[in-house]
Length: 461
Ligand code: NAD
Image 1: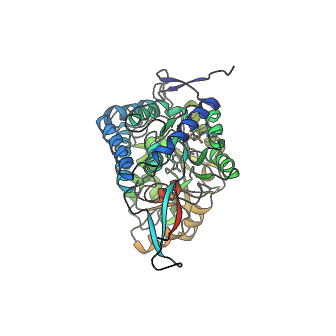
Image 2 (image 1 turned 180 degrees about the vertical axis):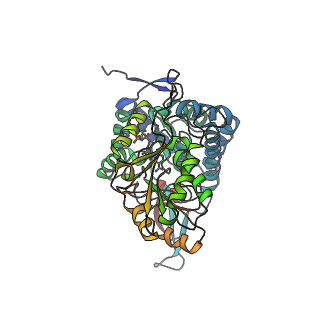
Image 3 (image 1 turned 30 degrees about the horizontal axis):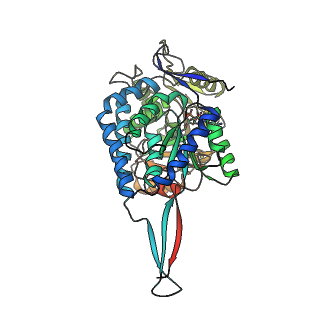
């Protein structure tokens, strides 16, 4: 007899509040969900692109009707500041509407046939089958949807395994989507590794799109590639913001403070290293400390909240441990707030040793390291000397300098005079180096590459 495991999702601001209690799906649940998705694929792939796009639009409409309730659920389950939670729910709607239209763009090419001038040589894109989508907790509605919308729109069926900390939001999404999709097109399995592992190993899963930590992503990629299925893993970052001597220092300090500490630094694109050119280093240090200290660390339900709690006690413990091992000079923060929730005061640390843990590894907390660069060259060298390559920013008033530096930054996303944390759902998004595995990007038209394969036809009338 198999034992059913039960887990709970809690409010990180008020850990005594249980958001939901759930049964882990485990291997048996995965088996059943994949079987249903596999069966549904035969019918869903035959639907017209218009019908599939129509279903995405209907899901968008229903999320819009429930925008407020969903935003508050995001706040309560993952501690995201309410203003950002509303933005995420709006983004989810936009993603669905975008792919509802994108499925109508030309899906292939024609070529002159070598056999006869009357023959047609045509290449078209087709869905790949059942797609497993494994997602983190920090964008509990946008990330599942930026995978689901293109996967379903292009004719695949999906099995979503959300992070356990974000189960309630995923269940609400399923409740809405089920009304607009045929049975089995969208399956949901719950739990952590004991559910994720059988899912990625399942022979009927044709593609796995994963977003999460480096450690888990690398093991998922090995497993899926080993059995010859498609895999795409988007993982963490150690994202630099470079401040050059000619930058608008006030604007840079305010932007970087939010990029580093907003949502308690729990964005994959959060700024975790601030690299400042020597002539303005001391001046900028003062400004960034003030900007960080001015940030609102309060209950995420308050409109003024900018920082909010960490997702769980272990995350805060890991951040404090990293600060201890990081060997830096603390400029501000570094201690928990005297609150029930998992708060950590936004923390800036000045680092001289470029090999410090804080300058090399992702902490995923409101913690950022300040480093000095003697020249533009050295700033780029510091920025690139980590294994990650997700997002990077450069602050300068000189456009020539911005493009030169930007071209040399090893990151999937480069932003000039803007926060590292910010992405547009209609442009390609993904990491370089160890931040991303797989040759395709997510979002925009790039997502089609992953969720479809091309087939070339010769038609000889
Ligand atoms: P995580 O790696 O702990 O979990 C991610 C998902 O993998 C969860 O659903 C989890 O249950 C599942 N999982 C865990 N073990 C597994 C296994 N053995 N097999 C299959 N699935 C398994 O990450 P997290 O804590 O949920 O999220 C935070 C991380 O996500 C950070 O590193 C952050 O940088 C990253 N992230 C990256 C992006 C991006 O687009 N690059 C976006 C958001 C978050």
